[in-house]
Length: 255
Image (cartoon, rainbow, N blue to C red; front, top):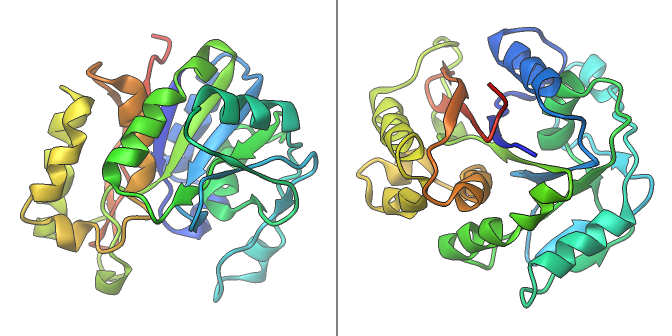
């Protein structure tokens, strides 16, 4: 099964049509039908490593100030407790807690999946981002998830390589600040040559501006971990509001 990292950007992408959402649609049409989808979303950033293990995860509208149309969106995909147990098994001895009632499917997940898999018939599981752990932990956890691909699980990281909400400038809807472009291009060079070197980006001069908080950057490390040193393929690229990178990458996609 292939794997992917998707720059999800503004929650409004969930209900809009643009070149990013069309790329997500292309991804859904191109991959073999997954047994399940495991998503590492920037929006489940907590103090532990956990996996959703309920049979009927709820659609979480974890944002505010947006049109009612966005709050009305439901993504009624089933969960799969057996796949959740499999996730916990393949990453041992790393401990993964079973979340049976607290989380569900957040907008980092459903905003992209409703384009890629609009019928919501494939089981969806989320893996949390443990905010207590450093970058190396997340890269290594991505490596440990690799056996799931042979089990028919589509692994998707959902975040943004560059994500600085404090610097957002809506007068530049499709542009990136110079510092955002420098960092994003440095990331692109690594991802398309040797993803295993991704952690060297923390020494980039624009890291603090591009990654002021780790939550949206960390999902990328899971795809880099899965890839090891195999180059990734660019699915779509671009910028939004000056300080967001919308780049998306795939691993092992069919020709």
